[in-house]
Amino acid sequence: MSIGAVLALLREDFPEVSISKIRFLESEGLITPERAPSGYRRFSQADCDRLRFVLTAQRDRYLPLKVIKEQLDAMDSGVGGVGHGGTRLLSSARTAVAPATDFGARAGRVSRDALIDRTGADDAFITELQRNGLLAVGPAGYYDEDAVRLVEAAAALVSYGIETRHLRAFKVSADREAGLVAQIASPIAKGRGTGARDRAEELVREIAALSVTLHTQLVKAALRGALD
Image (cartoon, one colour):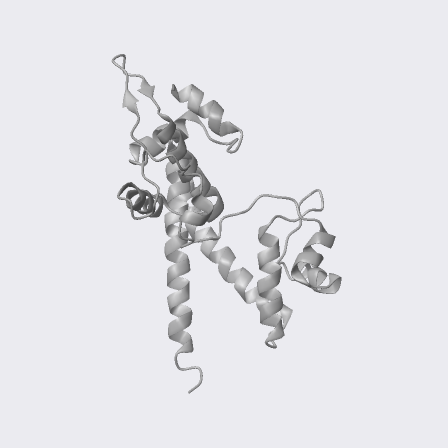
């Protein structure tokens, strides 16, 4: 298949994918399409499956490419049970990829009633979260899938006696971290080179993964002596 044919196959599930994105993933060693004598890329079904795996892992797990590549290398060696030329689709990324940094934004439309039903929270609690800036609703009045996990986590913390207003400290910390990452990635995204935005997005994933790890370790270190 040509790169245009591959793009057409992927666009239904990944509308934002582009030819430059596919070329970027090739330059990073995630796929290795053959080259025709004329120099054009020729993609096999296995290449398409591999691309679908990568795009799913980025979208649903927010994994950095080096983590995805490790998973693919394991699959190629037979450790993951799905080889490069296997008949099983690599689009099983939702279950096959380890959720090392499972905090990517999730699409979907969740109504307020559905949010209350799925989390067990009451309407007053949802309102309080929004008033404290912890929960945002879209222009059309819907939430995304991440709102479900956010409300569940907030409700669990409140059940331990933490007041909702005290959770604003988490929001302030998150905004500061996001601002720091943006300062680093924005100049790269605005570059004129091919694949500049793709490189910036990958940098954001890598820094975010490191940020989550650092935050976790700092909290663990700070809490070691809490009971003392």
